[in-house]
Image (cartoon, rainbow, N blue to C red):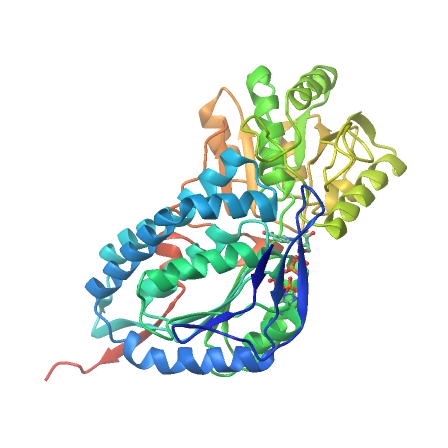
Length: 474
Ligand code: NDP
């Protein structure tokens, strides 16, 4: 059992003012694994005050000093990586190999930001003006539970690089992981008040961060619904808000693609992170006349996936985070069946032999039409919908026929054509022929998938205000 009874304010682990306690349940065993004491609005206000005070000196630190801090943050995470991997598996249910990658990525984010900082031009000359980038102020960081380490470090790295103190509100479902990463921040010897971490609910701590006039910017990852609430809440104080939200990403397979590679890859691109990934390619768009072949290939690809104990190195798919999310995924699977989609594999209930834990059967539906709920809404579970198109024009139209615009995937043996299609997809990220992510490049969404960008130079840019000075020469 882990008891998380302290929050981190002004360089110290302290008892929160809030007294509510929440159980932490293992998604794999459904056993109680810990308890977290939740902070409240007062804790958020104390943390914000500490960050505001720290801004006075932190904003004046040199680039070299902040480069050293980013390096120490990176090193501190690697020093605790075994504990962090363990917590990611136990608390979140991440398959072991994925957890190892996640922790590495979390540390690497600081190095990528360090590189961006080294290259950043703080002063530019435009016409008769000198344009100076100044740190925006205190940043409120609000994160969900599906990639705690990397979401926090991507946002924190940019803030530290820019000279902005932060108050972080992680999801209370990630309390153990948040505690560990906070211990790393403490070990890194960052000046007091620069990093503050307050566990608590979105409705209390999150709302206070959103509305407090001493917070200059909110950097949020989570659902589009909450993103809208945050944006509304931030209007009164005119905060900058960056939002990394949901998605319903299309995966276009062109007729000339190598289907034997593209279909299994598409299944993985949908089931990544136990199916709980904002960029999951959940709508597989294929030429109509290849449907029968795709059904066979998709079924075979799913059959090869091991669902189960995340500690096993050959497990690809672990459990869903909570009973609530599990039930939500079940409702979506039921709606697919009820609305007439063809179930290729998977379906309702738990996989055989996995009665304990929030395990979902990896599920593929064919003959999905654009009006079906499973084609429109973010499911956040391992559920793939296959839709067919007759022409490439129609495929592009279908890909863009969504309120979201986070990711898109394209497979084709004609790279010129793939690039041309990439230019016509309304999404912040396009991956061609199974290519991976580039974490130094910007990450974020078009349309209702978000506002602003994270990671690397673009993430850093968000944390500055520009000041134009003319007549600066004597
Ligand atoms: P939310 O968007 O509700 O939560 C994300 C974070 O925001 C949490 O830390 C949450 O705190 C906080 N929060 C909630 N309400 C507010 C508020 N009014 N003001 C400030 N902060 C707030 O996601 P859920 O965890 O509820 O998941 C719901 C759905 O969202 C999922 O099924 C999935 O579809 C989607 N989702 C998408 C993610 C993505 O990366 N695109 C990530 C996670 C979820 P707390 O949890 O303490 O209430």
